[in-house]
Length: 408
Image 1 (tube, rainbow, N blue to C red):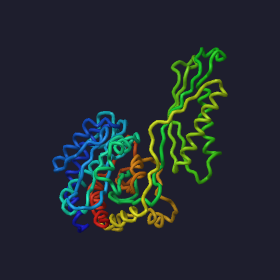
Image 2: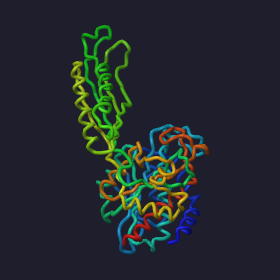
Image 3: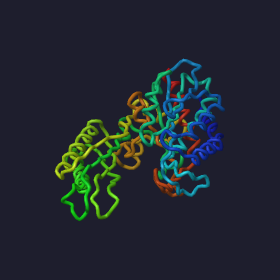
Image 4: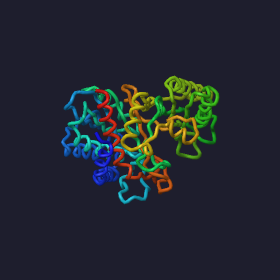
């Protein structure tokens, strides 16, 4: 397989991939509620000759290859958007109150581009490539739901790869950064703390139990975990993002509710944080005569990159794009004189796949600040450079085919 020719072939698909991306961008949907997105992706795959199967609540799986014996390589693209009103200056902006502010429209379009490349080279695939179109990544539920529905079986997946576009990166569009072995994305847990007090008139606080006072002390007390109970090497972030209580300025409310999230890089720290949060919230509330209940909702584990797959992915991407457009984390550190890692602060529910099979995460630069792509992911004005689309599609397909070729 000639990498230069393969890349040129991908570049001929630019208009089609952009068309797919812009349709998805103007029709963003959230969570599992992909009433327009799912049929669109399914129809596009069927036009190529695939037989996509629904998987879980709103996922799709399609198979490429299978004509030759071999292993199974999974590639993942997520389809969901965020409940953010778009403010980006683009001709194809969303008008339904949601927004592809994390670039999942780019991922899905690149996956459709990869599907076209794989169909054209299907007779050359040494095994099977499983295409995973995933919902509900933003709420950390889609990957787990698809795994529960049999994603990794029939045929059984051997390794997996995901790509994530990155806005505001100081690299030309299409540059790929291969994650180092080990954890590259933290575990995440959303939580809610309900503080039950006793409402009363604001002029007579002695007749009630103020849940806001207790909640305020709980908020401050939770910061003590990071400041005094974690070692310097135990990285974690605890954020209280919402606090709601009451509706009248002259009344003490009956209940206060706080919501937030925690991020941790290992499971022991994750378990410890959740335990101490519960103990501090309950104990502090009791000290102020109130009661607190802590509940943990959706979340995901750490994303772990496989050592051998990381090495292979770096080799294949450099074959395809050249050493000037593909880098390992170690190379970036050397160029910048730093000793960092590929750890990011944002969590990723592909982590569930990485806990089951050897996996790798690639970052794809999709917008330089000096070219007008200044805003970060999840910002209402974020934009992504469509020049990255064909390289992303080629990386998906080429990496999978090359790994299968070398691991017969």
